[in-house]
Length: 434
Image 1: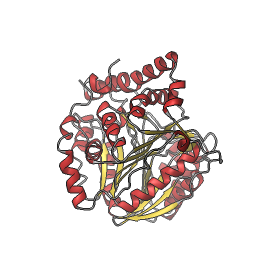
Image 2: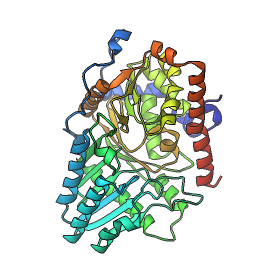
Image 3: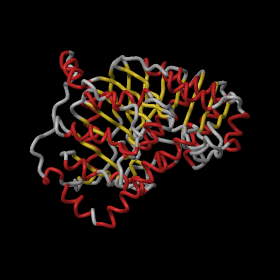
């Protein structure tokens, strides 16, 4: 069976694989590579699965490159932070979510938005027509209170397979919240049972200004009944994140690499160490190849899902373990509960937001990732990843070999084919009109 690279899905990335040594020299000259290498000579004993019960890390704050960041790994703290943003807004609220459920959490957030609208706050909500169960009827109380509700796309039609996977909250244009979480009970439940382990980030600083500009682009599109999908593609293609240490990156259905995919590719090419937590991991082969190289430089540590609402995504990831383990990649599966977090640390660069490392997030879905180049932030996020290992099982070559019986391998590669080739290829052809 072919790999993603062999199916021709990675055009536009190969040109980025040039002169990485020169980039590294420039980074060293400017003090770029401050991250330490991983411990050498790791043995299977060093990967022993911790026996202590897992608890989500307490909320913590970091100031990096002029951005004040509050990280909320715990579900209840994440919901409290979201409601505090809504309740504290005085002028405007802007929300955009992929999933907005009609359960207890969904009603709680909606009612907080209704209360804000009644105190004359300008409230707008955008939900994805494919992912959200909350429709116009659910938001009638908000509309009656003076708020606005928009559905990103119709559920059916040629273009419905593109999903607005972004998670955005903006309060008064001054504070924001992003991450991987949606509005549903499981995203705010304790991370030791049926809930999702995720990460929400409340931020203030220049990134909020960029986020407000991007939201305005989305709002103009969803509020225009004549808007077409060429406009969305142009919005993504023409988005300018700049070249500074703080960049708001956008992903979406373009024929060339989006700012999100392009920056990630360049950082992987020029980097030396990778730490990653990823709910869905089935990347193209150019990324696999680069991860293998990083593993043999300063190390690559990957935490993937051991539990999910979609077993095919776990099996698709496991199809890639043999390649990675042969190249000394450190692999863990998070098993304390379902994993939904999306966090990447490459040297001194941190990525956090809505995107997974899979074909959809890299090439199709509308995604939002905040990229910050800051050594102290990168160190703190590596500590967070280390905390997540308390709820994870180390996947050694021996463990993987025991799992990889012939039937399991067939199931893994079939899942990879469906997730990475069939879904990606069919959806891309439909959505781009090829």
